[in-house]
Image (cartoon, rainbow, N blue to C red):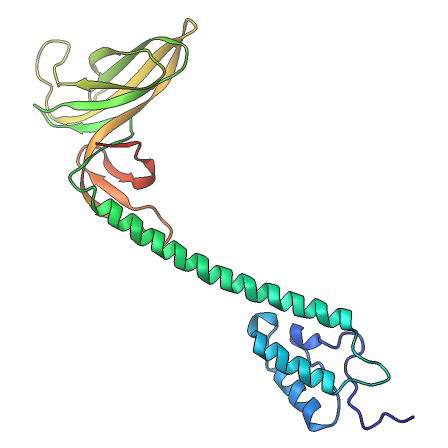
Length: 242
């Protein structure tokens, strides 16, 4: 029985057009159309589901009746394309969700202007006559905690104790130095040490600042809260809002 008038597809992979190669080599017009369409498509990423179904239909119409298309191979290709299409739709949905969250984050940040925040810091700009305040993360098992405040030259100007209960414990310095005089405006460093099991251990410090403005970050980045005391602080670093 002769089959010379029937298009003969790629017997190894009848759906090779999904990888950017021609799926048919037949001589009739339908086979040529399928081949032309497939050769102008650059892989699965360039196909929609409708494109796939159109090409698949043309391929089935021109299959060799003595060597029909492997149904398992067809289902595999269909499953792959469905997966790619689903991932594409998921990416679009996630992008929309991300934009929505960034907008919400921007509105939340703008509402913080004028509010006090507590953020990780080891130094702050102090204005004479005001207070420099913050908190210490006291470790479990601490028997005593001391906060040391130094000027820009590294000279200790004040030391004070903090409650030794584990967790965030507040402190405040009114600017009075060890000699009883008022400290001048400037940048001061703050450190804390806790005694745990008879040994000195460095404790994390957090300082207060007042939000003066907000800088929106690039796509995916956290907004920045600008403060006179701490400088720029990432919204994600804020531990407490007053």
